[in-house]
Length: 433
Ligand code: PMP
Image 1 (cartoon, helix red, strand yellow):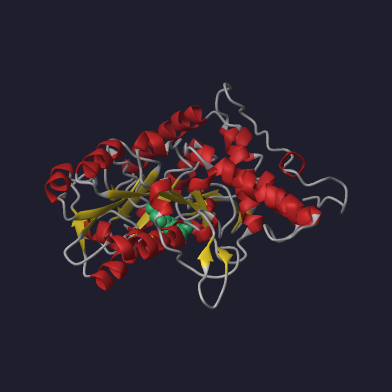
Image 2 (cartoon, rainbow, N blue to C red):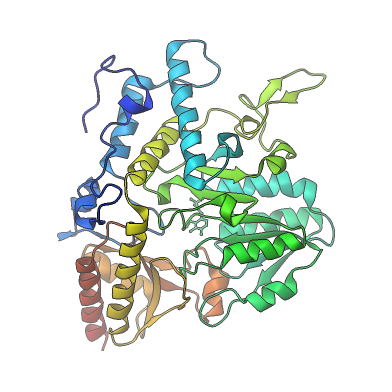
């Protein structure tokens, strides 16, 4: 990575975020091999083997454009934002706000003012639970949460429900790992204040029929929060088309740095929400008599945020924006079909869930082998997968499991890597007898 010399360029997004044009520009067929050149880490060995990164559900790797944007930001543009009257504060603020505009465009939100930067999905959900939830949930109210949700879309609701005398009601799954839509329709009522549902499951890959689910919830005047943590890297999102009330995601699962994410909220909802954390940046005026708060979104951004992360997120969105996302979807779907077939051929391997609409996440068990042993075995071959409960214990328990192995794919994975995975698993299976 080359760090620009101080003063070598004026840090606007155009100059700071250079080299964001990736191979496979819009209109061209998607070329995973070309895209891999953007990811330095994919070319390192692990335990003497080429790295096969299949832990994308936990976090994606970062393209050099994002890595360089972080270096360039700190090299020529570092400043706190919003409050300074000097040139660098103005430049850093402009970058920060440009990223907000880019996030709004990325999510199909009408205005950047509907985007709040957070540490990630978990913080965004907690923000909504603590701010919106405290004023909109009361005794007898219900929050519907499908059984397949990540713990971060369950526990914040349990915490606020307990405080407010409301109830978290699980929406059951069908055998294939889809949400039981009949049960969902039955459970919805005028007691339902909120539906919290993921756009794609991190453990089963399930992509639910969200537009229909949201429309149904709105018939009961329920608010809907969508957890987009696993969705955003896999397919384009349009919050207006979904008619989502809140939409949240994490940058680190989207080729951007850790510690940065965003919350989208409909303006009428955000405007009515009380501050969550208090501090600098979120106020209009502070007085021991009465303190008034900044308008949204700044009201929800107390303290100094992860400015470099916001710039890194902008770089990641520009990088992703240079790709033909429909071609990426087609590529990942074909890759998942290939992986599904290849894995099914491994004796004793059982895949969890078979939802018709899903992202490239394959969770499995191997007869007679503990999932953690599977992960350790694969690691010796340089293959990174995840084993455990995947922060989705209710979903795993639906299948009678406490633990499973998970291979989760991204746009830079290849059929050859699937072959490497399958070959390693087949050897483990043979050895296990
Ligand atoms: N929801 C889903 C569906 C996830 O997969 C994850 C991360 N595994 C989260 C929420 C939490 O994301 P973060 O840890 O980045 O806040």
